Image (tube, rainbow, N blue to C red):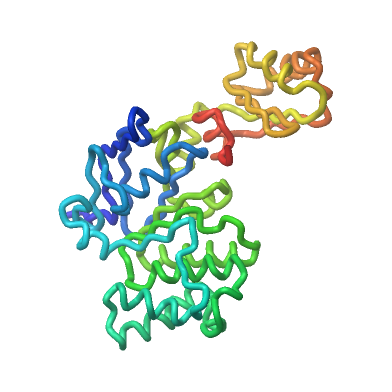
Length: 314
């Protein structure tokens, strides 16, 4: 018999008045698997995560964590869940060790187990040498790592990480990514949201791309690239009237998507080699002064751009 999934969400729907924020979202995560949930701002990711974590009741659908129903038995389901929110949830006047002791008591850990776990998770997130001293003096990255340590204390079956590296220094960011990799090696399931495509490519076994409340595609990176039809990405950089150039090049039959990113137009085009000359001619004729042209074969970022029409940080 197959093992029970760490997370099994089926047909989740959530409405706010006349707005459907999440529309028929399903997601499954197995032990030792990291699944990325990617989407532009306003895609419905936070609402979906809130339902999966039991913070928000769905209008329709079901959520099970380690086989326990989040709707029918929320306390039992939440015992298997570690949630690390985007906003810091620590007490700045307390040390890292005292923060962990406090939250560990809330989670019902006994004194002996709690002492052991506090030491373990501090080492896991690289704070073993900073256990004492008020956490208000920590760097942003260290506070983020303490936030993750709190979510790990009770050995959850599923860890939900919502934008865990926002605003952190490169050293702390790499430490967080290494911690996530170590956790999945130990069999923990992870649901990971990020605005950094390279993090998703590094960490995630499977990726779900969400936009306008729905999961538009899901699978491994290779599967997503294959399903996209293997379109190429053309990056046109320069000055002049980029908006007029974007309008002009959108009219070409070969061009599927055009997104402006500062001084760059990013186009998704099947078989770019056969249409690059015409594209350059059209944007130049529309008043764009080209300084650089790059053609890239399909990757996860180009798939995301094609499916949502937006850059990940939009």
